[in-house]
Image: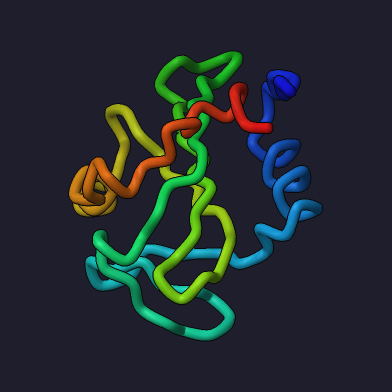
Length: 113
């Protein structure tokens, strides 16, 4: 079943929360941290279930990627990453370092069932 495209990150975040992806991850000290449990994750501990890119309606430089994540300890949640000219380079490098094998074959949010 294809999902409808959403123009706003919050729409998809809410949809995924309803599906059990309730953890919120923050990037801190070159690691991803579960904001509730404070568990720390390295790139190899992260599995990307889906991702979706957004571009600002009025400012094309206002860009972000919503990552839908499962962790090595089976926690499920989301992380919103800004990208483009104003992106945090260390945070972007962290996501580039996630092994390709840790990306779902259905990582395109529109292809998930």
